[in-house]
Image (cartoon, rainbow, N blue to C red; front, side, top):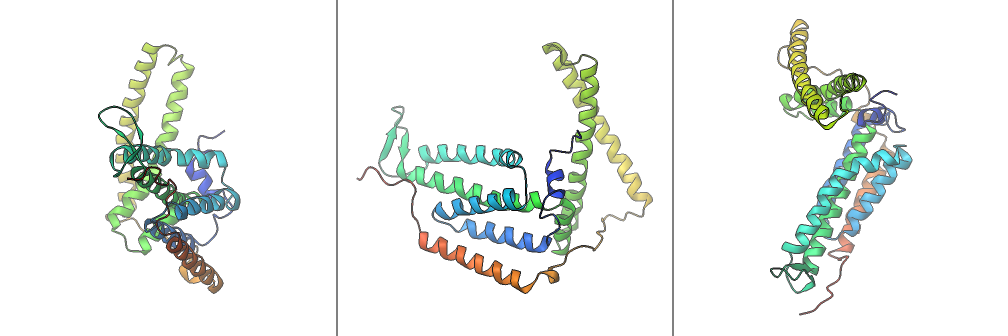
Amino acid sequence: MSIFEDTLDYYSMNNKLTGSNIYYKTIFALSILIINLFANSPIAPIFILIFCSFLTIHVAGISKRFYLTFLAVPFAFAFITVIFMAFFFGVGPQIWSLGIFGWGVTADGLNRGILVFFKVMGGFSALAFLILTTPANNIFKVFDDMHFPKIFTDLSVLIYRYIFVFLDVTNTMYNSQKTRLGYSSYKSWLRCLGELAGMIFIRTWEQGETSYQALAARGYTGELNFVRMGSSIHDIPLTHWVALIIFLVALCYFIYITGSINVVPYLIHP
């Protein structure tokens, strides 16, 4: 099995929505992300999380296990945010006390934490839909068409490209060490890990020099050129535009009617 058969790049190029219009997916994901920021109740972000997850797993066909793993990091940070906001950012009476230094959980703080948690997860699920269903090169092409700073686009392309190059190098070197009984003890583990980190640094330096020489030999003048091919924003059918507008308007209305509804009620009244 290849090292790349369970990575973001593999799934982005092998799903049911890979060939769909990149501009439509970008507008869809970014619109939901922006609307999600204006929610004052966690109900709408919960809906966004469920809806985008459904599209990613069941429509695009992304592995459920990989998708949940992909969400694990933002989930961990968002969960920590809930804890801190529940204890330190709420006002009003406490619904649960630690009994230490007057620390405790307030309903206001818990509601704020839950709102931030689901806004983070809802927004990230929208971005995950775009990232997991679209090859990175197409996303960089959209950045270039939107006239992002060239240095930003070029660095993004090179960084993304060499992440997988060095993953492959790291995997090869790690397997080579394992076949020579590396990592067999704690002392061996420390020595092999140090050698691995040192060799990766050297290979990174060498690869950077080689890449620059290769670019210079092909007429590199400080900017990477993108081939204009594939989908265009003009290829989006009118019916798709209408469906998107209706969905976004309905989502805005849903956020409006849910207002500031809290998941956790005020259990203690002053």
